[in-house]
Length: 282
Image (cartoon, rainbow, N blue to C red; front, side, top):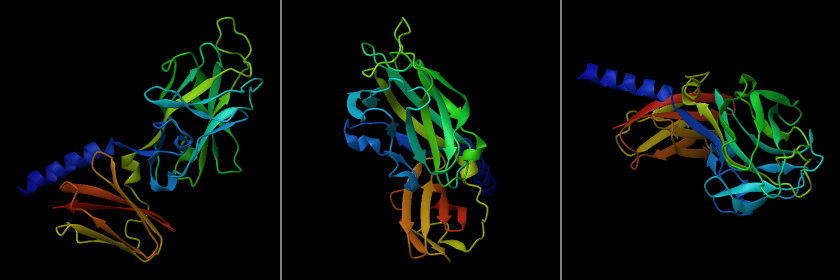
């Protein structure tokens, strides 16, 4: 029986190592300005905002790929200077993947050409992401960026910027006219994920952090640290975030009664870095 249990756990960890977790996501479900704020992601990215630089104010009330989208005009003469932009933390995560969708207006054709770039921190330099060249159309499939790998430089960073930079003044009209002030650009389904196998390999696995009881058999897991500030993110074996808790007293207690039995990973961020601990709910 013991050998079967060990084999089952090994298979579970193998599946887990291929999973991904959401770092930050924008989907614009409500059609209001509140949609500028990321709706899903780790706690460090809960207040991150989508911006349109050099254009009109963003309109969130227009149709998107599934619900609504972010839309802006005022892209005229914007090549190399006007863009969509997001920022986010990747602290504790590597193997970053970007997905997004763009569309341009049919009767009011917006910019045809974009290029995706990244920057590290507020004072960094913009760099192009390989294979990040985009040609838009009046649909949500032509300019679908599907699982674009971000450079390794973006791993384990306090702040990463990504922008979709207008890369020519040509519109999507069939005659190749220049973009006018009324030309429309939309963006939707912005998603940043990380490989969960890299997120569970912390640099200091024994750095003053303890979990008890482990296995958990009393509906309460306690995490204690010799440092006061803690951000604990709990993942299941499919890479889904099931709990996120922040504390400033060196201790986090996690109610486990609503979680399924099995193994979980606690990703623990402190002022000294990140640590990952496995625990089991019986």
